[in-house]
Length: 166
Image (cartoon, rainbow, N blue to C red; front, side, top):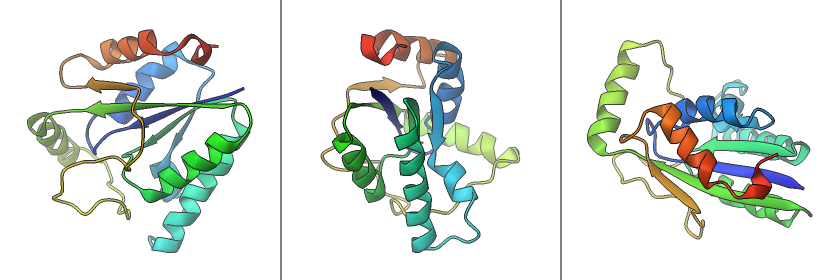
């Protein structure tokens, strides 16, 4: 069986931070962050964006346990989840992380002062509210501004179905 945690949320909602904490609880899970696949591309074009998503999909097919990290707004995500869902023995659980606009602004300001490099991508136009790909069923939703990252990861871990735990 293949188990995929599709972890989505708007930029600066804490996805990478929560995943770091989750990895201590779920060490067998391989993290597939779309930004890692984007960084491998030599240039930022719509074709390279498609290539990055295809590479993520191929890695997910090889993995028995993985966490896919993205904003959840790309139509590419909907397509690869559909393809993965059709693969025999695949379970997909979507987790949405949310944070208030105030918390996200604070985190964005912290990023400005760090060496964080935001990658350009072709998902949602800036200035619009965050909305995941339509038709995506969200099983778990957590506000990351209310708990510490380790507490949020523990809460998510407790809510995972038993078959997602090794």
